[in-house]
Length: 79
Image (tube, rainbow, N blue to C red; front, side, top):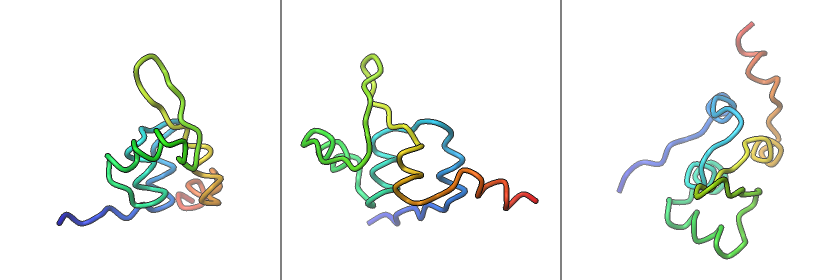
């Protein structure tokens, strides 16, 4: 069994404006890749998933709101 990554606020903020379904699933619920996609297919994914061409993209802003992370948090740590 592999150890799951522990996502910090700084890690999530470092993603930029978008990420993929497996990463979002891991951040939000500790899901493996396959379960994250199954959850999306069932319409149960907790944040919006956008189809861009053939790719599925998850905006990071809804993840930040769900986790109650302010985008200013990263700036506070750098001062």
